[in-house]
Image 1 (tube, one colour):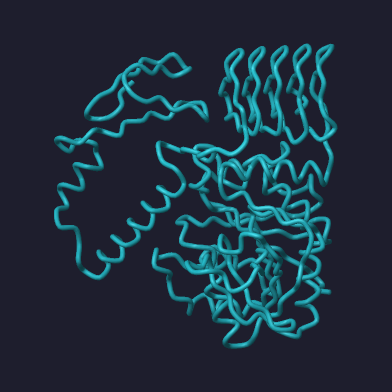
Image 2 (image 1 turned 90 degrees about the vertical axis):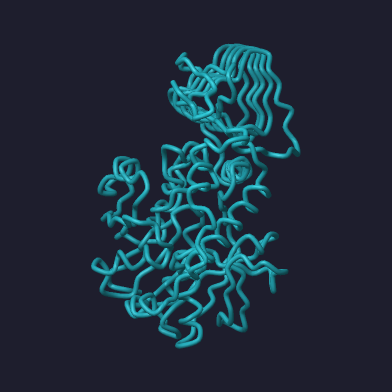
Length: 416
C-alpha cells in the first residue's frame, strides 16, 4: 500500500443533460437520497482508507466548496483545484498535477461506487504489474458508456460511446489508478472532435505504450446521466442503505421504510409516501396526497389530494391539489424536445463545428446571428423563460411564473 494515498475526484462538469436541475448547481451536487452525488463518492473514498482528496471543480464551484469545506466531516483532507474551462476529463486531471507526486487514484465525481472498487484499484496499482489500472464492470447498456475489451487482467481496447454495436458488455467503471507518468501521456493526447481532451483517449494511449491492468468490479455502480436516471439511482441507493425519516409525519401519515425525509421535510395527515421516495429539505407532502418512487427536491410541494408516481419535482416547484401524475413509461420532453431530438441537434452542431475548423465557415453568418436572437423574419420564435423555480417552464403569452412576475411573448424574446 502507498505511504500516502491521494484521490483526484473530477467534479467540474456542468451536466447539461440534467438541465434544468443543473441550471444553478453542478451535476455532482444533484441529490441522491438527500445526499449529493459527490458526497456518496467521497464516502466511498474515505471508507476505502484514502485520506487525501483533490477536488477538481469548475462550474458553480462555490456550491461544492461550501458544502465540503476542508473535509473534516468525512475524516479526509480536501484540496481544491479549478478547471476554468471545461476541456474534458484528461484536461481536468492535468490541473491536479501540482498536488500529486506519487501514484494516485482518479474518480468521476458523479458515479456512485462502493469502497471496494476504490480499494481494489489502489491495491492493483500498488502491486506494480502495470503503471496504470482501471476498474471495469458489466452493464446492460454498454453503448452509453466507455466500452472495454479485456483479455486476462489487461485492458485491450476502450471505445467511448461507440456508434455501432458495442464489442462487449464490459464498461469503464470510472475508477483509475495512475503514476505521475500519466501527465506526459495527457500532454500527448489529441483532442476529440468536440475539442475536448478525454481521459479514455489517454488510457488508450497508455494501453498501446505500457499496458493498463483491468480490475474487475461487480459491486453497485450508479450513474445519473439523464433526468429519469435520478429515480432509478435513488431507488437503488435506498435499497442498499435503507431509509431514514427525520422530518415531521402528521397523524395518519404513512412512510415506507425505503424512504428518506429530510429533518425539515414534512408529510401531511393521511398522506402515503411509498418506497423509493426522497423528500428534501423544506419539501412538503400535503394531506391525503400519495407519492411513490419520486424525488422532491428542496422546497418542493405536493398539495392535498395529489397523486404522483415516477416523478422528479424540482426545487420550489408545486404540484397542485388533486393533480395526478400516473407514472410508468413516457416520452420525456425537456425544453420542447425529446432526448433523441436533442442528440440529433448536438451531432449537427458538432458537424458544423468540424466544418468551420476545416475552413468552410458559415454560408451566411449574419443569418445565423439573427436566428440565435430569435429575430429571423417568418420564423416562429422559440421563446421560453425558465422560471426561478426548477421544473416550471413558462411558454407563450398567457403563462405567468409562480414568482408573480409579469410575462409576455415578444418576437424579440422574453421580457419581464
